[in-house]
Amino acid sequence: MAVVRRLPSNVPIDDGALARLAAEKDPRAAAALWDRYATLVRGILRRTLGPSADVEDLVQDAFIGLFRTLPGLRDPDALRSFVVGTALRVARSELRRRRVRRWLSLTSSGAMPDAAQEGASDPEARRAVKRLYEVLDKIDDRGRMAFVLRYIEGYELTEVAEALGCSLATTKRLLVKAQERVNAIVRRDPLLAPYVNDAGAANDALNEGGEEEVEDVAQGD
Image (cartoon, rainbow, N blue to C red; front, side, top):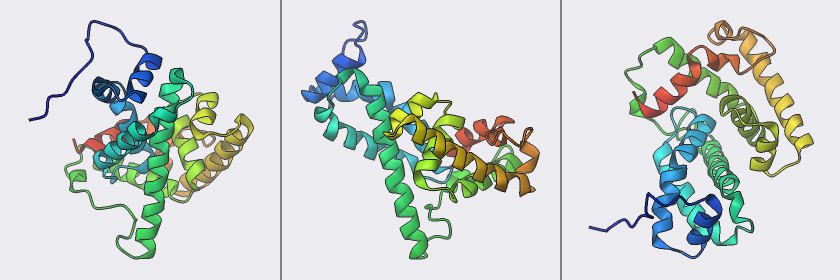
């Protein structure tokens, strides 16, 4: 059985030092990176791709890519942004694969089947969440990721721009276009409309228990 080597828990280590250790391929850095950022990566993938995504495999893919590309990180103190960017690249690749699956008629939605969705504690809310991700499927990839980071993950505009690697002005345009598209569909949708308190706030579709349901569906609880 392989022994996982970890950094001493009683010695605080900041992101810059951790990134440098990872770039030097210190075997202790892998476990430390996973402990610090696995939850963040998993959350971004769940909320970007929706409840039917095979998230755990994608989390593994993200960390494999992270370990491979970390030596090229110019600013070690920007580790968190680098991790977020890596998760978004994995999400974008999965969205592209879904389109291929739809074109090849492998599945109607492009998402692989997930038996863990059964047993919902609130079936109506789960249907609403599923429908919301069907709405997000109608948005281009960058707009979808911007929407998720801003309105579901709660990132600041500057953080969204940094994560997507685009200017603040471009980020604002992406968000306006995505929000207008989502709002237009949600207001006409009988399943989602009851979750919207303000027609100008698209993310309200998640506020009345919906965001918790995204987490619950992804976990299969």
